[in-house]
Length: 573
Image (tube, rainbow, N blue to C red; front, side, top):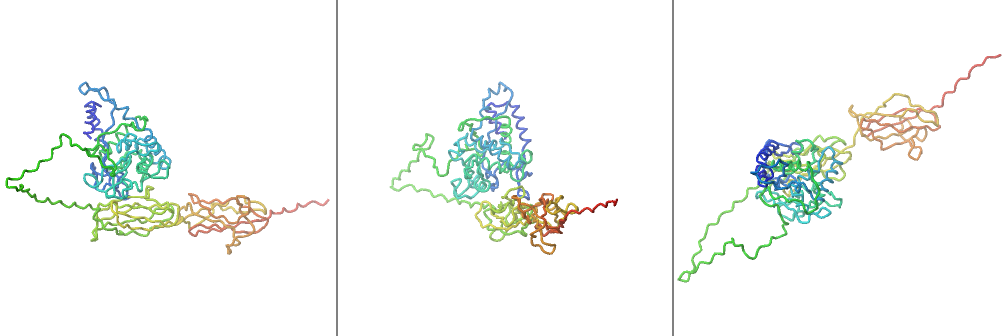
C-alpha cells in the first residue's frame, strides 16, 4: 500500500504529511483474509493473504491481478517543495456512460430482488475500476459488449493460481487453463453459475458490462450479506478477490465515488496503469499472436560468428554441457484427488419451508483412498422443479475440505414446491465424476383442526349463515401455516360423499358448490371459509374440513324454519 501512495506523491497529488495520514488510515482499516465457514460462506479470519492462493478459483476472479492505482485525494495546497499537483481529480471521477448505466441498473435490480443486501452502485464502480479500469475506459458498444477482449493472465500456477480449463475455452479462448474474463474479470468456473443476463438479450455474456455488473452484484449479495454492515462489506469484497491490498484499494475507490462522479463519453475514461503483477493489464486473446519486428533493435546483440576451422581442416569441437534435469512440479492437493466419497450423508427430507435435518457431506480421496485436505468442493442444487436453496438463498456453494478431507455443504432449506431434486457435488478445477444426492420436499402438514369459536351454526331455509366458519390448524401443537386444506359438505358423519342438498357455497358465477379445494391456512394457521348459504331443505348437516397430514374436523350445521309464535289468548266478552 505504501508503494501506491508513493505513486501519487510522485504525481504531486498530496503532501508528505497527508500521505502519512492516509497510509495510517488504510493500514488501520485492513481486514483479514477470507476463509470458509461451516455453511460455505466466506468470512474474515485471522490470517490475511496478500498473494493469490493456488486454489483461488473459489473467488470471482480466481484471485487474478488487479489495478492498484488509488484515487486522488482532495488535499490542501501542497508545499512548495512538492510542486504543483496534477489535476486528475475531475477526470478520475468520470465513468463512461454505458458502464455507469450498467452499474446503476444492476444495483437497482438487486435492490428489488435482494433489498436486504443494500448494494450501492458505487461498489460495483469501485470493483470495475480495480478489475478493468471501467472496461478499459468504456471500450464498449451501445449494448455493453466490450470491443476488444479483456482477459486476465493464464492461471497456470506460475505466479498466479493454478486453475485448469473448465469451459473448453468458450469464454477465455484457452482450452488448457482458465483466465479471468470481461470487465468484471470472472473466471469461467464462477461465471458458469454466477452469470446473469443484465441487458435482456437472452444471453449471459461475461464480456458484456450489463451482464457482468449484474453478476457481480449477485455475487456480492449472496449468503444474505448486508453491505451496509462493515464486516459483511469487507467479507463480500474479499470473496471477490482474497487480498487485503485488494480490499483496501476497492474501499478507497468506493469512498471516492461516493463523494461524487459524473458521466463521460464511452471510450474516454481514464485508464489505470499500475497492476498488482507489475504488468500493464493489456492482455490480448490467446488466438492473437503478437507481431515480431523484422529488424532487431539496436540493443539486440548480434548473432555470434562461427568459429573458423583449424588449420588442419577440422572444426573446433563444441563442448557438450550436461543436461540440467527439469524437476517435476509438485502436484497441488486438487490434482491428487481421484474421486469423491459419501461422508455419511443421511436421508434428505424436509417439509416445505423448513430446513433439512441432514446436510450433504463428501470426502475427497486419492486413488489409494487417502483423504485430501484443502480441496474446493462445489455443491449445486439441480432441478428446475424445485425452489430449495442453501442457507442464504443460493443454489451453489463452495466449501474447502478439512484436515480429514471432508466438505460439508451449507444447510438446505426447502421452498414451497414439493417433490424431489438433486444436490450435485464436484471438485473445483478437476473433471471428475461427482456424486449426486437426492432430496425430497413434502407438503406442509397439520395433525389437528379446531374451530376458533363455539357459536352454533344455524340458518333458516333459503337464508345464509350469520357466523363465518373459521378453523385453526396445528402440527405437534405448533401453528401449521400454509397447509393445504379442503372443505366438503358431506352426506353424514359416516358417509363422506358430497351432499346434494342443504347448505352450500357459491362459486364466482353464483352457482351452488359443496366442495372447496385448494384452500390454504394463513401464516397463523387460520382458515376462514367463504359465506355459507342454505337451500329450502331443513335438517342437520355436516361440513368436513381436511388438511395435508391427516387433520380432520367435522362441523355440524343446522337449517330450521323460524319458530312459530304461540297465539295470544283473547278475553271472551
